[in-house]
Image (cartoon, rainbow, N blue to C red; front, side, top):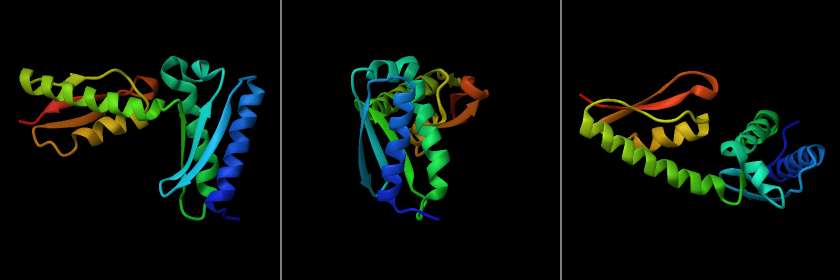
Length: 154
């Protein structure tokens, strides 16, 4: 049975809250629904733990949410988990990083390899540089070692 966004938001909130209880994390959630999907904001005493190691836990729980609930949605609803606006701030940081790396690739005429990052962050880099004609991007490596390479166009 397919669920609407309100039902999905409630089930996703319960799922995330259960993970936090099971891990004994002092975190609370707030669910918002919009045209993009279900957004769950996380806040509380243990937010630093949740965001440690480059927000690895945030990304892992977000991945679980999408894997579990996307197929249950009537309209292909996506799930976005955030904590203290980490993802918004990280997006701005990655866009700036992409611009600087593209400039370095142009100046040196060689490819610039960025640090390994999750697929959602690599996507931000790819999109930030997609409309530029003088550089292109590729992903290289595998797993947690996958990174973006920015290459000047010939």
